[in-house]
Length: 380
Ligand SMILES: Cc1ncc(COP(=O)(O)O)c(C=O)c1O
Image (tube, rainbow, N blue to C red; front, side, top):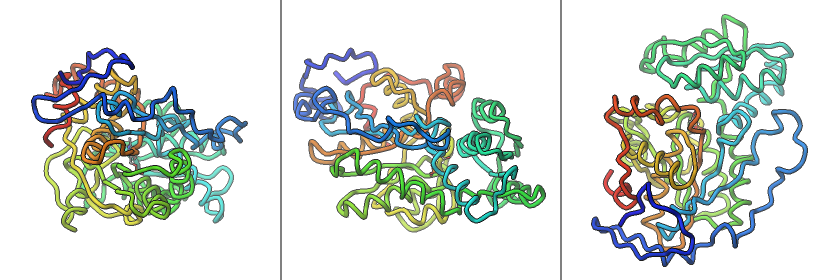
């Protein structure tokens, strides 16, 4: 028996599982893994009054994925970045980029912020722009989930969509945003190259993780879009735990997997994931201290998203399930009791019409099969 999506959770039931495909998932051994009820939450400074919506960014919980950890005999923890006020990890970058532009005087009261984005950075910027009295002009490729455009419009952003195209095309959303910022005399926040992006994670997410794990962490696993999250967190954590293993999780269609493995940016295929995967090394990514890389295919992203929903009650986006799949694979290959941390980058609400929609998945031939964890973690 694998730990299938229909399995019922009973904390006292610890069968010894030897799967047919050779992956031993010993639930009894992981009874040694600390469980939430015996393990008091780390007190974070999240209980005080926050200074406006910008003060509500960060200090997110760290969540132990109990059933996954118990099945693996290794702990998988996730930093719940979907609980930021704008619903994603990108709120931190948005906050730091706005504050940096305010500090230099580039962003003045009533000013205009312009950004090219797959959506989440735009949502963070638009939300904070309202609170700070700025205008947000957001340039997006036309192939992202409808929920993200709708959220941006609800946040009063001026949304400009461009055809999804290669970076070399001058009409790519990145170059379009740069031109538009000049034309509008706005501030182009340039999340890909702006050092304030990774700095947000170096100064906040990294230290929060370190505090929450109380100095015990064996691996950190994360995908990369701009590279800000991976760059900031990995460079901070490596100053604290030099033996920490950092693993990049990368979808097909991105060149970073091969970059880490061979030093060359190459790829094939594509992916339904949004906000991650890139064919160039950004300044933010170049801060990352990465030891290894794992490629995660769409079928595993979808399968894990539905497994997490069914078994953990975790409703995550596609990059989150990609991260957790890779984290579980890394954990599986570490000694029993090891602890792996990853990131829930945004929530499933943002992909309800795609990742969680039966007909959309069926059209893409990605209908989840509900196969058990042991089989889900086999293969590529
Ligand atoms: C859903 C999602 N996951 C992951 C990322 C990657 O974060 P970063 O840009 O810090 O690499 C993004 C970035 O936009 C995102 O939107």
